[in-house]
Image 1 (cartoon, rainbow, N blue to C red):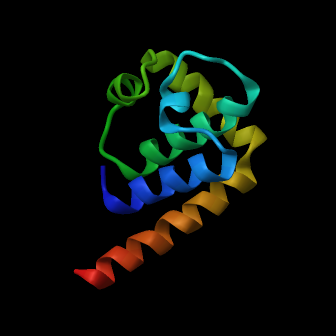
Image 2 (tube, helix red, strand yellow):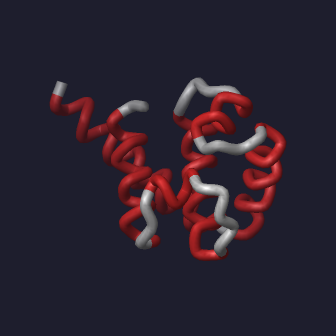
Amino acid sequence: MNKALNSTIKKICFDYEVTLNDIKSSRRNPRIIEPRWLCWELYKNHSYHSFPKIGLIFNRDHSTIIQGLKKIKTRYGDKIKEYEKFYHEQKEKYLDKD
């Protein structure tokens, strides 16, 4: 995982008061679903992983990933933009360090 993506995932976990283990768990608690979907969206946009690979990372079937991504765009568009902005800020920060 790239550093900017890792930092953004950590921020999502911090903001929602969940752990990465919570996000990867099989629990379907509403307080976990939104950050889980946000992480999936970031992986889709900023990694070279396929849906089946993202599914393996998050202990889900690839079809579950696809369904979650469809739902997040309609429900949490503003949150996606917020974390996309944070991701790009982190990416610039890490590029400046190199």
